[in-house]
Figure (tube, rainbow, N blue to C red):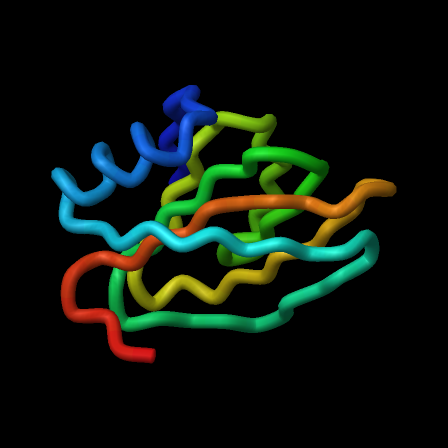
Length: 100
């Protein structure tokens, strides 16, 4: 369910994701921040740039290292948590057709 690709340069990631049909936005979470029970109609990708994040996708827990890409398929229930002691910075992107 996860696909890993090591990258930490935001411009390079944005270009790679755009070529694959994904947007690219930066998100920051303070220590202890939790986002629970999300689903989207399109695929999503995330890459942690700094910090320690935990993502749960359909009951499977992932702890991507900075630069590792995590793929979240359309319709998958998922959550994100900053489990580290510092602010986490991570990128997320949605596939074509995503509406806020």
